[in-house]
Image 1 (cartoon, rainbow, N blue to C red):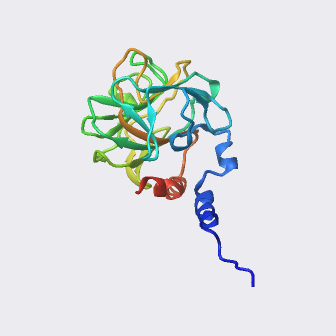
Image 2: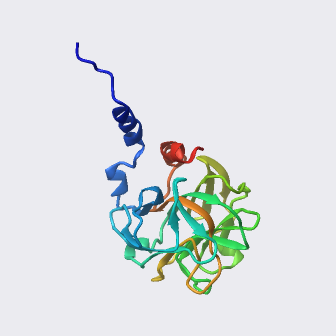
Image 3: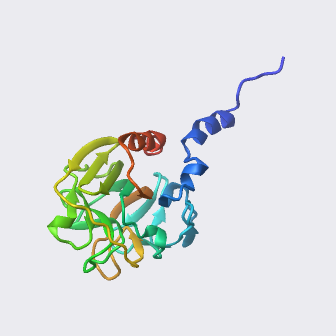
Amino acid sequence: AVSVMPTLELVRSRLLLPRQPQLRQRLDPDRRLYLPFWNMPDGTEYLSQDAYGHTCTRTGATPTGQGGWSFDGSDDVVTVPDHPSLRITSGLTIAAWVYPRTVTAEDFVLAKKAEADTTGYALLWESTPNCRLNWGTWAAANISYDTYTMPLNTWHYLVVTATGTTVKWYHNGVLDVTDTTKTVTLTANTTGLRIGASAAGEAGWLNGLQGELVIVQGIWTAADVWQDFQDNRWRYGV
């Protein structure tokens, strides 16, 4: 009789393949940036794995065996040139797998703005450490905070959605905060995107790991967030 027992390689492939983003999801034009750092080449330049194929330049950040890239908190950064697809003006979702090691006053997950810019957007964590989304100027009216205090030296799945008068914060697939105290006005700019740092010449270097980063034009629902969390949590042991 012919054995029908699956090989180890076949079992692994069946387990892993459904957990990879489907091609139609990756190439969805509303998914403006998709960077799975766990699956990126080691070179200094590579293309984002989305419909736009942004040229990304790595300076210093190093691949690890922990599901992502390590940023040293002093000069490591990934830069993405400005592109019309990143000039989001109506509904924003940012999803990121992050692993903070230490936190200073401001450690940037990403920034598409300089501190003096009155346009663009940025996601960062602060010394508490709580996460913060900023759009436009650095005024309090343009800042929303997640009240969840992230433990250091462990993986976290963070999602923030922002549109109109509603900012929602999710942690590990679950809604933490619904902030309806601000009016979100997203204004386009031509500033390049920096991952792991603020604008060139400013502080804000991230000390930790980044595993995956998604920027979407549009608002993910709670079901979208939960599904993405479930699809990827195995990789980070969460």
